[in-house]
Length: 280
Image 1 (cartoon, helix red, strand yellow):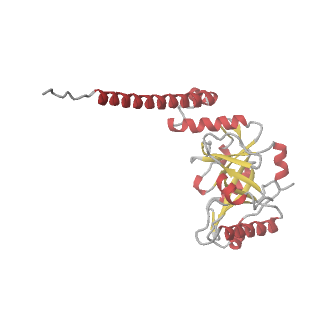
Image 2 (tube, one colour):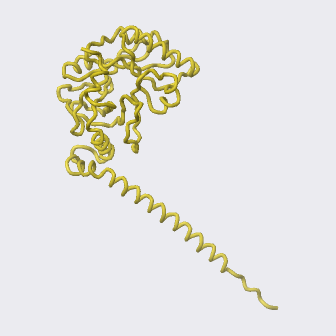
Image 3 (cartoon, helix red, strand yellow):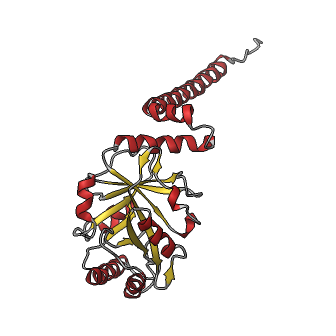
């Protein structure tokens, strides 16, 4: 009887083919990663050189990319007006030390005043007074709580904020959806707040929100209002035409403030900014 010889050739071929496929996939992943690193490094070359040359002794290595992006965006919009915003979460602020961020002059500040129907920011009065004393164009904002009465929230803001000539219009900060009412009911509440505050100050409020919230819930039904939009996406470097202000980072480092700070760009020239503030 002839002895049958088992064949292992196909098994070996399949194994070799599989190994080649795995190797090819890993190779392409590595190439893509290297391309991404090279592209990012080239795109941010000026900012990275700035940091590696002058700033690495002052900040942690983890902050370098974030700060490089801040430099890159501000450099792109060096003809615009730059500002920041603060609340009690920034702690004690040495206002006399605040001047610029990454070499770009800071000209305005938004200060949190109130939240909900009964909250007064613990640092508002101090920050509000110091902002004016240190010659910043200032604006006050209210953090809207979707599950609380809108008119009570408006009164909370009105009784605590006195706007003067040279200040920004009032600002409504809305970031969350309601847990106990529909989106339509929430929008009604927002409009009631806006109208009550408008009647009191005779100045149409600005609305602050995130880009997704703006696109999904506010853009169509609040067309008569101007918007201050938050978008921190690392790959977004262009301010959109319908954004009055762009809050593009929450990770800035400013002399005089120990905590990280949001930075905002006004979508216009210094002269255009004068038309926005309460006239002298």
